[in-house]
Image (tube, rainbow, N blue to C red):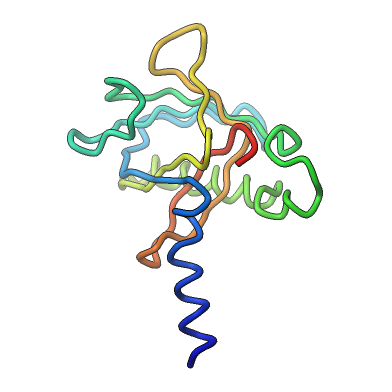
Length: 144
């Protein structure tokens, strides 16, 4: 029982300790450029703003560059090609079903594009468990 309790406490706090947060979005567009690269547009409901300026709609260019996020192989376990593809599939499914999904940023998980406001860049995605037992697609950009 103690082991289970310790595990649950660790799971609940792991995302918060790592500096991540997520918010509910609607996926308005998914353009898959390859198995690893995509451009998505997400709409952020009022009152659920993630702290990226006044963006009600965010365009995110997603690429898979785990070496930009994690420097050692052991750190890269969280951001694998399999986890990245799973996250892209979750976004595609949310788009096709028009259902809301939790989308988040781990550390500096989204970098503002220099070309346009409300446009961001991600170096990888992973589906992570939230404190409430649900899941969210998290974006990574730089080391945590």
